[in-house]
Amino acid sequence: MTPEAEVKVALKKRLEDLGLYYFMPVQTGYGQRTLDFLVCGFSHFYGIETKAPGEVPTFQQDCVAARIIAAGGIVYVIDNVEAAARFDPHNPHVSRPYTPPRGLRFDPGRGDFVLDRVGARDQRLHGGGPD
Image (cartoon, rainbow, N blue to C red; front, side):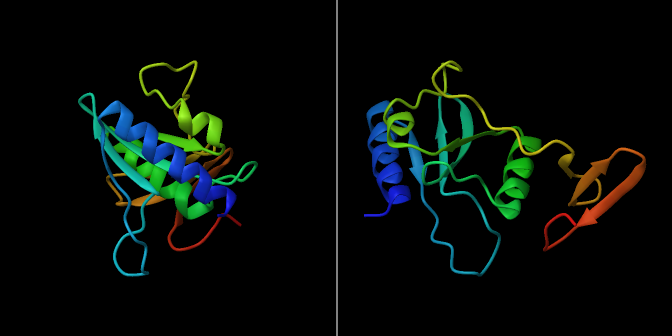
């Protein structure tokens, strides 16, 4: 089992123990991309991306996280089995919400991601990473 798969197994058990609804979409290349877990519970929507220890979200995953946050959801990135096993969205000392990199945000008016840069205009980011 890969390190990321071990994190997913631990997180699934924790979500079930907490009684939260979760869905793990299969990414096939069709439709919109999303995070590893879409979770609903405690009157909130959560997006959770799991990673192997030490890994960070990709640019595309950061864009999805920014969109979820803009819509009122909460995003977490969990990169180890211990954090997955004690995941608690009610306790920020145990599970800290994720914030995409500074300057990346979803602009609902434009329907796209923008990267704010000091001294420069917003630049459209569609289908690629920052230059």
